[in-house]
Image 1 (cartoon, rainbow, N blue to C red):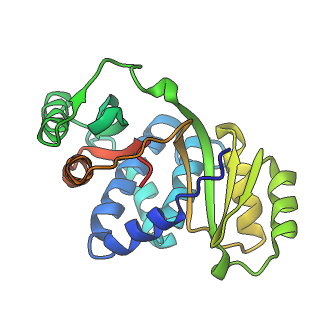
Image 2 (spheres, rainbow, N blue to C red):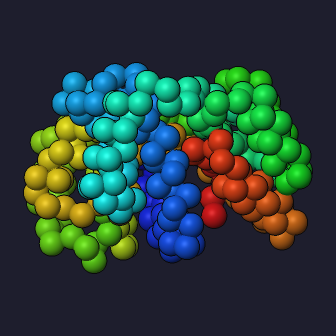
Length: 242
């Protein structure tokens, strides 16, 4: 790991999205629905559901809201069938962007996502064109101000639970694991009452790209803002070093 913490971005995202918390919860609700439909309502037997629950809790989704979403998904055979679609493309200065969508209308999602890239001066590429630049990993970010443990104690807890890397930053700790070990690390932190600012299986860039001109930064923000407004979009990963 480069030790390139994204804590500042996560904090900024959470603050920015406090007003749009309903949108975040709607997206998480869709992920819970798909996870339950694919693997059943018991997180002990459904690792994907367990990972989505961890992500939901890190986004401050109340436990009763999570439970209601799972029960609704388990009991509603007529719920919309969402499919997962991934788009890859380029932003300004060759920045790599991966978009994960959950949609009940693939044509609509493709058109809207393509439009977001185009309006920001980017373009959609072929499947696999940028994903090789990222590693799929479990990533947990812990705010130092919210953590009662010292670094050594937290690191031992993480490594004992199966984490593969532990990075201390100025204001946060970043814990990286293989996707299959992510659930065990999250469970260990939950049992130890460690608050997590972010917890999800994500795509981590192997290298970062800097944007130096105001025009490039403006265009990149345009792409990301338009994608954030799109209902079908669940996650956006990129290698822009903000």
